[in-house]
Length: 114
Length: 113
Image 1 (cartoon, rainbow over the protein chains, first blue to last red):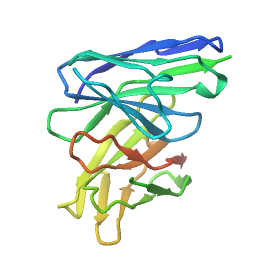
Image 2: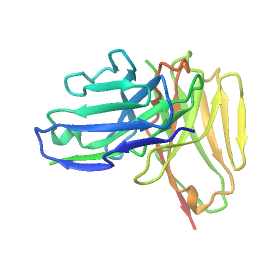
Image 3: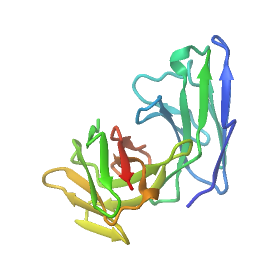
Image 4: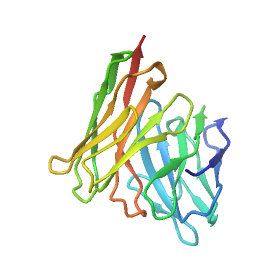
């Protein structure tokens, strides 16, 4: 398995502000994924982050709202910009180990926008 | 794109009984099907997975079956215990490594003492 650390674990933010979530992995990985889990709901893929290239966003998610950085093979950030209460969710970082398809998740960042 | 349906949304069983959760998928290119357990306040934990070249896989009290023709797969938990209470998610992907997972909506499993 992979050890994935996310920061912060939770935050309460004012609407209109932005929050950057950090994801650190204990070893180098090619692909990193960001998911959103709205209250009581399933996980939805936001984007895929490759080192050295632009992130690939899923339908319904745009770079201006969720800019992603991937400066190296062990780290990524997701920013939730210009937040509204609808952005209140758990945001999860995920990686695949090597060529295997097993996906491992961080503990998530619980965001509340007031 | 892929669409994964999961049933039931809530399942309550007596401790010691078996629990079965079912999922269907739409994309015939999907070939990797993991199951995750999520406890309150934690990220999803991979509990078992199956690839399309296998019909069944078992790990102690947990088993997964896959019917590629019908595009459905199921999670079976036997001899349920209180610590099995959690939300379980099925997922599917093409398994190319560049694709993320498409998740079902989850099943809240409640083990009654």
